[in-house]
Image (cartoon, rainbow, N blue to C red):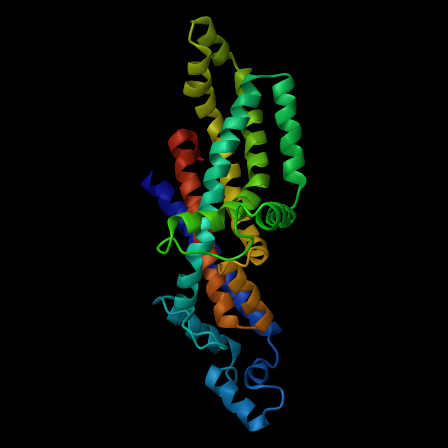
Length: 313
């Protein structure tokens, strides 16, 4: 298991490094007149030149990248070019909002998707067809459209939840839950559909195998066969899909946060990209890549625990 973890960490570290290199150079290739945008279009050329020197933009890109890497390895991701705030502080203040949405949506996806998938596999017929049809329709609706509908119907129309804004959990747990409920639903609907279909397909295939018929012939209750044997053997593909859905949900939070005016990492990434705030954009990219690495490693470890063959692959 240790060598399994080391291999996954090495592959993940190489992936993160590649992403950082490509992102840095692509961002700097597309960055033009950043200093003038910061000081203003009517600023004197001498002021613009001093700002470029202050930001290090007058140095070769390779030298700038070397400095950035040296700082990143010590936890210093630089400062925002526009606000002057430390990038780590800016991300730390906004990441909890995005993580609360993402984790809530993933938990809802895992529980509801698993339940629907098991029901669809166990009750073939009208129930199965209804769940599959609902999953297809739900998976086809874009998350931002679901968010808009929820905000209009339940936020503005019925006033069950606040249509916009965010309440921190330390201020009010009830208020916090009310502000993240609709965003979580908007993020989870499509993911639930994917997980439910995957669980259903894997369990249907497993139910046709010889060992299931043997277990039933020995008189084991259907519930024990389903949950004690079939579900565990079918959990591998479902875990892989759930890991992918975490990435999809995390990315979808960018749009959903805009709809509900939540001060999360997605909103920060959009504004920083529009401004050309490269240090802040790079910070968001690094944090996102590390989160994806952690999720993929967790899924791999769970896969290896469920199926020893994975550790040998």
